[in-house]
Amino acid sequence: MTEKRDELAEFRRDPNGVVSGIYTTCRPKFIRWGREHHSAGAHDLADIFQNALMIMVLNIESGRLVGLVGTLCTYLFGIGKKLIQAFLRKNKRISMPGSENLPPIQETDPGVESQIIENQDNDNLWAKVNALGEPCRSILILTYKEEMTSQEIADVLGYASPEVVRQIRKRCLDRIRKNES
Image (cartoon, rainbow, N blue to C red; front, top):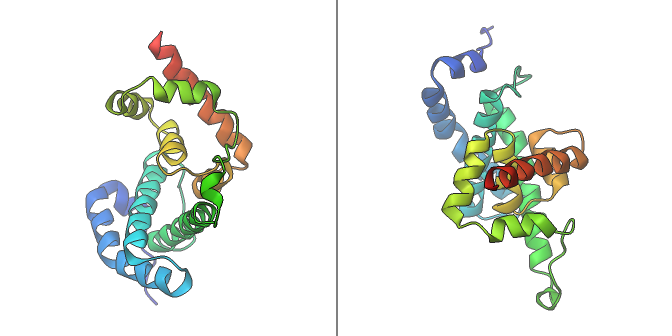
């Protein structure tokens, strides 16, 4: 019987090497698995894999992931599966016949959030988001770039409820607004 590797310790010693190894070995498996079990194309699955990999790295670096039941590849597949489900739900919402005539459904009244985003040029806004650090960065990227709901973000990042995500997002946006003053 072989001894179980401590992949988290290996990541802390050589993050680039571990990520490179995971990318090389897990990416083809993920794409093959995604095509067999979900109706998503290889290009979309490759993008989803990239996002899942980034979430995994951020979870390790922020201390959210402190132990593994399986391997990092298995953990990555779990994140990827939730991202695939969110992607398919999003595409289903977008591609409904006649939906082009309906206004997009907002999770909450955009109000101040929309004003903050509209008043920033992209580079300036995302520089501010990056400066906030985690978890603000992940939550705002998943909300505004990936267009995920609070429930989807809670599932992907492992929060207890979508309300927790909304509270964190509000605090993050308040910090951006405070820095504008």
